[in-house]
Length: 58
Image (tube, rainbow, N blue to C red):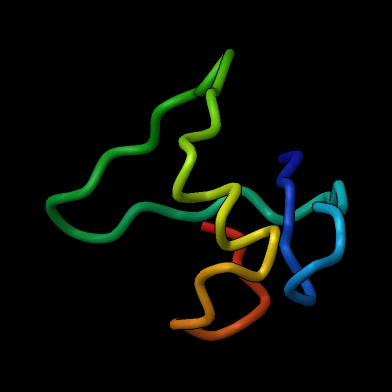
């Protein structure tokens, strides 16, 4: 699957191919055909928010 990954704060997102996850018990796998980005995500990309660990790919 395609994923946009933040590897380092202040750098642009990088497109990566990643394995399709296998759902666990009581989980389902859905196919996403379109996705938006919220402003909080952009704050993380811009380096304004520094909490959490990298890479961010979820």
